[in-house]
Length: 280
Image 1 (tube, one colour):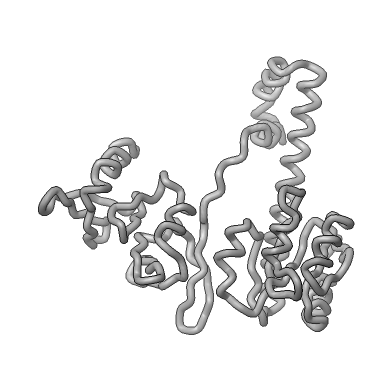
Image 2: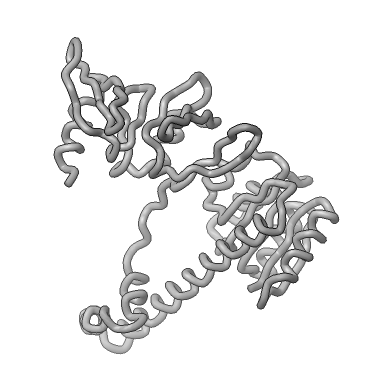
């Protein structure tokens, strides 16, 4: 695995390099101290993985991603001392987010996650190449038949899957703060989201957390098959809904599985009822 280290602090670069020495089959292809250097190095060395500092002179980490545009991007692990950038980091599909100071265990978890992703991508690329070769030699229809006939064989399922279009990637976890700690919550564990001034409150069981996000922003990142807006200030996990009860003036009450009640506005009632009707 070819790795590039980008950080404007020499001490930080040395620490990442030292931790990488603990891993097998890793080649550090370079170190950069600024965003412009990082763009040039990525284009030159084509690294598989980049540990990318967010705040740097002349061009920050997000600017590096933007500068590369539609070019082939490596896997990226953002590194910074400021947790406020975490949500934005995942918006650009970062593999992980390391908050300084991080310990060796946290670093290794991020590295292994990136390595696992790269191995899956390599397998998918191999599958696409095999599919393309079959189509070239046999023609599209025959190639499809060959893939279908072998879909139960070892490895063939991965080839067939690789030939399918990539799915839209929805938000799968949120970064929250609690008692001075920063940790992640699986989106599937969230019961509902509620607007709270310039923030969004996330309800998970009997706990709740504030995140720096807007309702429009969070709704755009959620899987519409799993979450629905029921009020201008509330988005609910469809799997948590137990029943709907009529209320006043055309409004309804959404009753969750744990008995908690949320108001369903007339504006969103018909759309929610249709979606609940389609649910298995």
